[in-house]
Length: 529
Image (cartoon, rainbow, N blue to C red):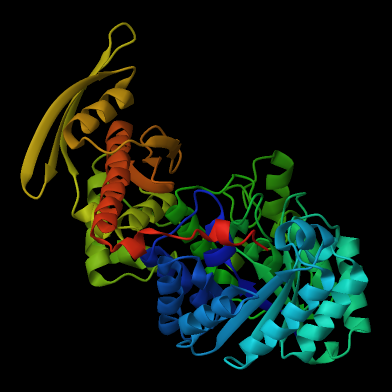
């Protein structure tokens, strides 16, 4: 069977999407999930975008040993040098060079003629090749480029040393038939095409990213660029879980396979959603809550007779495991730890102890702990425990007075470094009053609210409430999450965590040298693939 390489760009293209930025600790957590899943290539970032991006790419390159590590670079010597410095410590480093090839981009963005673009593409691929043997070249906006000019650029890139050629559908414009035809045309009419791997990078603006990527593979591409949960610019990218399971489920279309351990998909998906403070849509393919749910009587009858009647893949194949063990207040540490292992979590003893302590607190408030509750407890107590949160303001206690005919009042006590501070405030509702009281104590810098989300972790009136708060300041988004059966407590903790992160960032900026205060955003430095 032909092997299709999976190139994951969650940490580059996915992280560029609004509200999805990650800190270094979070990026490493995602990278480890990708390594455990056996992803072939991890695009760890866009090294020249900022000092922080450079550091994260470099750290991931030196930490992750089971995958090729790539950094994106524009077709300039400075970009390529910076990318190489970031990835050279990887077990298998790759420099990913790109330049736009459509008439629209060349005229209005690059302000270059086709001849200049052709010359620059060849020169910069050759420049990168002197530093690294593994070179990927991307023709940005390829699907809106003149096909004949595109083939010339690809031929020059191959002759200059590129080992992978990526054909991006940068704005999600093409259709499956067009994509397959384009890949077949390039592979059949470009000199040296048989010596390189062709790749597709599809965006989802018209909802066809996965279909277009699969069409590219059927046309001969043997690498797919994708992201966990389909994150990415605008409407997102090809979803890793969708393309991998499409190839696995429809092997009758072509004898194709990937090296992905699909049982790690659910774990990786949940990790990314939790880090960015979002949840999967109920009907999200593969990883949504309803992906393997059946309510219709006809469907239930069919599934009970034979699961294949309405399930084209098993939940176990993507890491969703069925288990009838009931966990509650009488459960011990061993049972909780064993269930977490079955759910795909590998915890240190310290992390397990912290999660078990939280588990016992939740058991006092609800009778039965479901898998979704356990996943939420782990998320809030392991990979998303930020140092700035631990050292910042914490909730001591609060008291709320509210009704439908009086103004809500909240008295709140916060603790920081052993000191307790109290204040009281009014508000349009209990949450507004609580947040006003917090502001009276902390006196935070001016900020706006981007998102305030509340959702239940599982079913039932005693469910855990998961609150996500995103505040915006300094052109950055700071995310906080709170978890409790008391939705007010969860809301307060979420706001405190967001403010703690904002305050931590302010301190870093105050202590940084002037040169470190000017950051080049990846979304400004490149229009994305």
